[in-house]
Image 1 (spheres, rainbow over the protein chains, first blue to last red):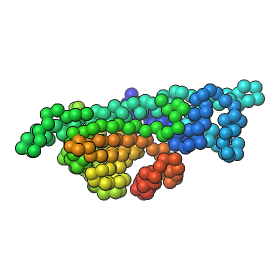
Image 2 (image 1 turned 60 degrees about the vertical axis):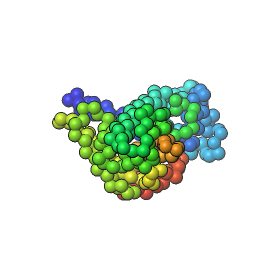
Image 3 (image 1 turned 45 degrees about the horizontal axis):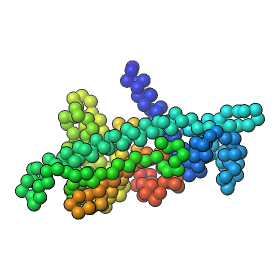
Image 4 (image 1 turned 45 degrees about the vertical axis):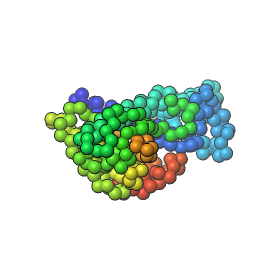
Length: 132
Length: 149
């Protein structure tokens, strides 16, 4: 039971992460995020610097909203957009875990290389300390 | 942090390794060597690896410890011994989502510079063959993996 819940949780985390990565995989959307990282803004302000229709920009904003990267709230008649940093924290978490994973694997790879070197002591060189 | 950054989120690990590029390339691609360092599970007693080293060929690494076993698998996208190896990567680390790993080896005298780049792929983008903004490498990947989707 607990395992099923954990799997569901992992699956929804995966889905969220996928949505965020897909949202980030577009230069226009990354530019929108960059703009919003400097502070919240109205939809029209966000659209302004792009050489495309408001409708086209709105589609990108919609993708960002669905992924959870961008949130929208209303101030009077204006639609205000802001970044939901929590969704980007998940991406940061993935980056940290993945980096740690590969650092550990490469440590293991270097240990194996040293073992293999010892096995072939008859080789021309016998360096005791691997350099970094 | 990703905020305010216009590059794609990727992980890159660089390391200077005291071994030749060909030996390192073998560690990544020969099953009997792969099982000796690729397993991230200390309790793993029984590791099996298999690989079909050609573009589009698959590899898998099964790590068992008693009753449970875990698997990492992927497909080779680009093979250029001993300089470059590009493969998809799916396993517990990625929550079983397809990702892309590139290993580049550059000889520096007796040593080798290893640069590993791990990208998480926007899965829907691959399905649509939409690779804009992700560089030409994903064009190769889309060709290689589109059959699987």
